[in-house]
Length: 582
Image (cartoon, rainbow, N blue to C red):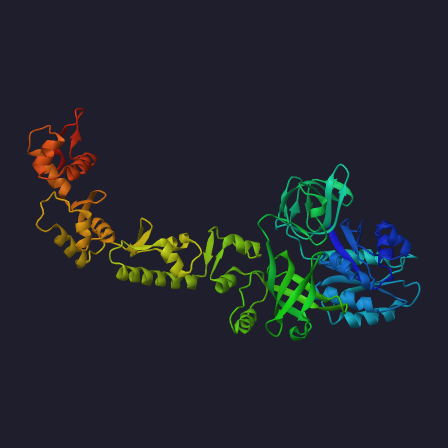
């Protein structure tokens, strides 16, 4: 299927033409038919000579209903610009063309209607003069009469040529279906309609609608139930799991996790001078119309604050309109959907300089150069193509800088904290300004190593001379199995931090809280105990080692754990010096 929107001044025969082409009534409401004018969006379809199907979104032409018109043309890739032969170019012709140009619609046909009432040549010349200045300059023109049928076959053939030139849709792309109608059907529940511009829908699909997760209960296209709809297509979606009140025009059905809701965007403006834009305008994108506050940045760039978040991507094309003046201010290309704050003096000018180099085409390398570090899922939601499966992606130049800075921070930490076995990962994360500790771990490479949640230089850590001197002083004159009291150690310069550092450095062994012996005490104790009669009791071991019960109990337990002694059933122990420490 291919989808085309109508555009043109009120009462220039848009709905009449659609009716003549399709045999269907596009005006759905009795009020529209009574007044002879389209108020809301109408839909109809027909088969072309090639056998392909084209669906028409028939939009209102009256100036009061321009927001409805924009909701119809927003998601559609092509348009019929309709001008009546007997009236020529009119104000709403100009506004509709301005809207199509602002949205960068490049495919369409100029259709001169009511050619039975006047010579169509003059109306065509007037229209071509206006079209030449826009994205629709050079489109094919066809003159028709819906009353006599003249030119309708030519129009059908031209429609075939038009759809030949439309860019192919990507059925594997993420779904973003802008809702233009929402209603409920007894026995079926909530139904929404829209133009599927990309992606594929099937019954059972899970989609996001605002903060809710919904499931596709059924699909209808071209008036018939279907098991699959591929873009581009008009589609009605029956939803399960959502109340009608939670779905409205301007909302969107989305592939979960593939879009980013944002209320702050940086854009390039194609149209009025940014400096002349009023502070408040309305942003039209898809079927949504949202008031925005405008903050000029550069000559053609601005920051927009939306009154409510929308699912937007880099490269989206939207339109700015001044509803008070009924004026199309211009089109906008979204350059950034997650822009940085502008809090410091000169930040706006600096940001404008950055945006001058941005073209609105999503590019991974360019985004990483600007953001330095980004989560893969966030980039995908912004519309950036990402093939790398890693959770975090980093600009290569920034990664090299981080590696150098990591080495400097580890060395600085070692100098400032000589008793610690390395810099804690979490402290390094803060110092490097990284969002995840895993990034610090990924940065570590030789000669740095990670041990126990800390990063240090590879190889045995150096032992500060002051620490060795403090240990020697604390144990001077003591027997090999004498453990100084905790308060004595503190008084001699071995506080808790120094004690832990001495244990890590291999200068001391810790038998129990506040029970420390010189390194090698366990092996020496095993040799001493091997010389006494086997097996032996705790009391006999204490006497042999000339120590206290406070030391002997945890020391023997350490020998048990190391296999230097073995405890028997009667609480006595034996040692085997030949096997364990010969």
